[in-house]
Length: 96
Image (cartoon, rainbow, N blue to C red):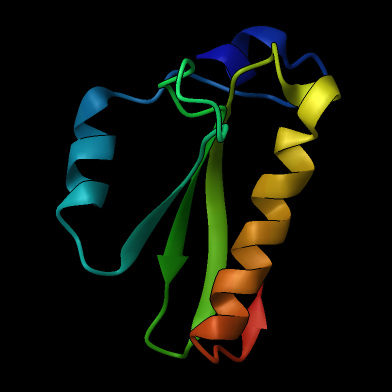
């Protein structure tokens, strides 16, 4: 919801909770959570939902951000970077 509320350049919309439940239960989807090393901050500062296709392509599709950390910690860029690292670790052909 943070991305939707703060995005003025992209056409975004609310996704039903069911979409996320289905992704969690589907082996073609991975969820990357980025957290601070600090023990006092428990919630993720970024979450990336990535689709793994049968053609060995990796597609980060949805990103959630805590906007308190976008500028100070670069959590959007770090989410994209970690998605690329994960695709490389899986030896996938492409990252979209």
